[in-house]
Image (cartoon, rainbow, N blue to C red; front, side):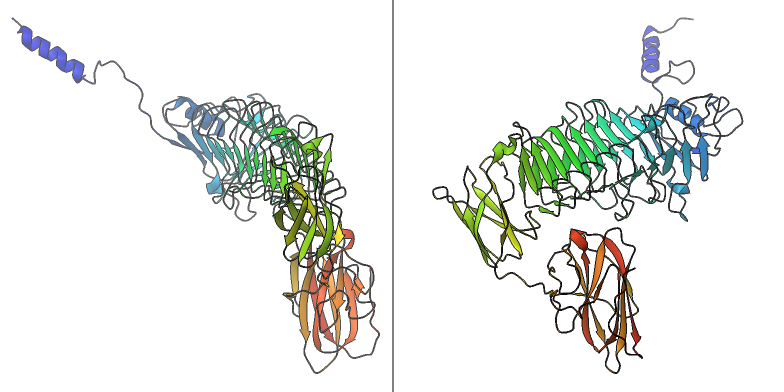
Length: 615
């Protein structure tokens, strides 16, 4: 048979353009997304996937364990999802060792089996005490939701890749990463290396129990090291912050050259979930070293709460252009903030009740650090301390006059702007405003309302160096301690409150010992027709608070109901006539914290003098 050459050429060209299925050379595998449902809690040598890459999670028993699912996901092209058919406890088998690393994009999502009764993860992954990571993420774009990872010697989660998400604000997305390597090197979340960028860790409990109220320590809470940059711990919207408390060492540690641009927002560091009960971390709340551009709160990030840690609240060593903005840093066993570095800003924070200084800046190269517009008060040392040449040792202002409408003084040594505050002592509790210094005379005057009882001030120069606070000067004509808007409370009612962050308008009580902390004032009314026995009682206190009954006709610390109407936590007043009265909850020696207040008003039937019971 003779074959037409042109027809043959056409046939060959057709095969090249439209290859037939049979006998054709294989092309690239199709990229698909599969969901693998873990239906078995077991682990061990028999739980390997029998045909990796076929899109089916199946071991020799016909089931799908977590190890099996990870093996299949790593072999299957595409961004896969691993879910669970029920709540379960998975213990890594010691003879099999660590689970496979997440080597391709995969989402492990246990949110659908969340324990809604106890509000905690339904899936527990235990490392069986081995020196392993619970999950090792080496691929980009992975996610982990709704797991309780514990008892792993190295740590719960390790990442040296990018764009991963650990936890989330959605229902059931919180992870609990606790109880890992308590006597070894365990880390809740370990983010390491120059490839570890743009990861997000949010809404997790790290270092405390699944209920969020008891310590269950890792060694470290979160560590970002060795050039891990531009990662976010927490976030900018409600529900993204982590609770990082109860760990044996630092709550958060960011360290090493070029570990830059990391962000912390909305985290609770050192307290139980809810932000009230102290748990602390065993060392610093947050430690940042040799890093540039770290943001701890900012105009866009949520503020962090850093409290009751066993050392400095926020330790910034050899840092540059760090932003610390809008945070609450209190009750730490050391300085609120220790800063060694340059060109950093500390703005709009509350820094109070730390045993050391509010802010301490150290070192001759620690320059151009701006520390203004904060509320700094009731710290054990100075409000702002400069040592070893820090901030060019810029001179503090001198206040020459202070009244309820203005503060004036002088400044030397290059100060150009003065910031004016009120305080009960020598720090800066309430920021009022700023004014420009006359560069010829060195004089300055701030015109505006001053609450008192003392006025203080600090100065900044043209490069941003900030001074210590000035010596305090009593404000003439300041408020006598009245309150314009007391909180309502009714007889028979119990309310909760927290004096932390409140104003300190009441000192100099005419009854009993004085209280110099911030306070909350309550108002109640006794109806006409009889006299009353009034019982005001505090409970659930974490700090030393006192209760005072103030007389009818005014909310003033100088007008107690009688000479004995105060108590450590309880006051009983008998033969109280009808009228409007006030209760002050105030802190002894500057204390501030949460409490419950219960008010009982029984009918008075037997004349008794006013008595006070202090148990």
